[in-house]
Length: 64
Image 1 (cartoon, rainbow, N blue to C red):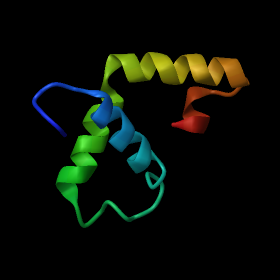
Image 2 (cartoon, rainbow, N blue to C red; image 1 turned 135 degrees about the vertical axis):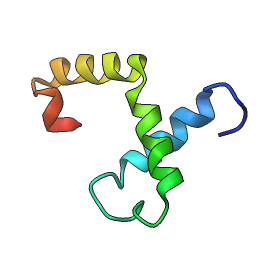
Image 3 (cartoon, helix red, strand yellow; image 1 turned 60 degrees about the vertical axis):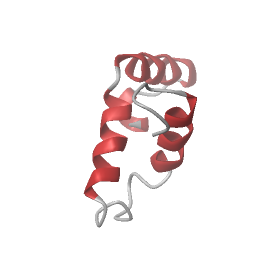
């Protein structure tokens, strides 16, 4: 978002977009949707999601 590297700005923006992931708000914006998908496909995010799911006692699919 801010530069070629993945930064804290990307993490913050991806978290905002996560709030609308189950709506159709990103549909008119395919580049934003692709950005969101790339951010959450990152291995570090997948590990974080798995650890959070374990911590709260749900499956990853429940919070994905």
